[in-house]
Length: 444
Image 1: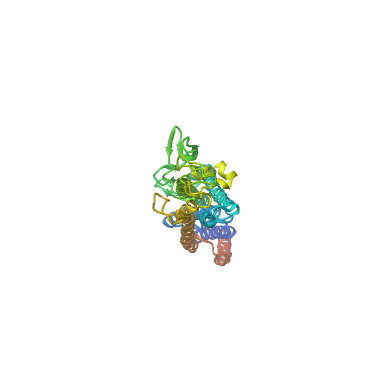
Image 2 (image 1 turned 60 degrees about the horizontal axis):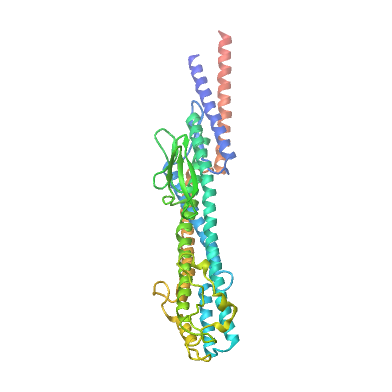
């Protein structure tokens, strides 16, 4: 009789394990398309508890790759928008500079012709408008990036709180679904901020930003806040934890926030500075030649462009002298005292096109303007290459994860059928043993 009881116990345990396997397998099938879900297996045949299949090292690599891909994609998108603003909408600034010199050359052939003089002024107006438009476009691009930084910082704060809550859930229950949720939130947080998540010996996850600032420490989450700098009018990013504030603007080097910081403070800022320099150099070089020559009225000392006091902001401030803008006869195309038919001044202005009067005497005005556009274009091309590279890495790691922890529906359905057959067999075994015990007890 004791042998039958032992067999009954074994059969009962086998039924429990098989039924647990059926439940877990069915859950795998139901969550096959759930983002971040890791395949589960029976961890303890006595309790039927589930454990998820996962690799901590691989999870960390996936999280890092997600941050890199999000950064390269966001940076590429921002550059594409800036490139459109720099080169779209008609002639580029370098082409407008070339057109101005072309019109000056034509006016040199007929310095008293009003149509030729008007054509020079039209080209000058187009150049001023082009520079101002590009300056406004670049400023708007930086402003848009600044807005995205604030929005994404707020979203990162919300995710940090979710990650801390997920840590609490894991600590209380150890539920595999809670661990999946925690990994997914950490990945999303990395896509915004870069940084790195790690699981410490206590089983809780910590999330740190580049530079070491802790955003999530177990069940406690700090805030990622933005405040406006009074000197620049742009946002700086801070990790706020109680009374402690840590400026991490220069340390965030990943995720969407890192992309927008790099774009706003480096690429777009450099483009704006170069454009300011072009505007300043155009103004100063043309004024130097123009003021030394005379208009049709024989008067000298007039500036073609309104003088600029400094390079900073020059692209937004560049303007044609109001008097000359209203009357092309005042264009100084003749040498002083030479008479209205002289073209010495026009030839001197035309010669500026080949002289290195820009960028501290290292480039022509046209080349300096071209450098602004090409610099953004080259950066955009490199960014697209980064997107391709990071996408390949991310896809490769996702494939590795799928092979390890992903759900193969066909395989799970096969297992489900196998477990159901095993459960039926165990039911028959237990039923048979139960009948034998009943008969034995009745005969006693």
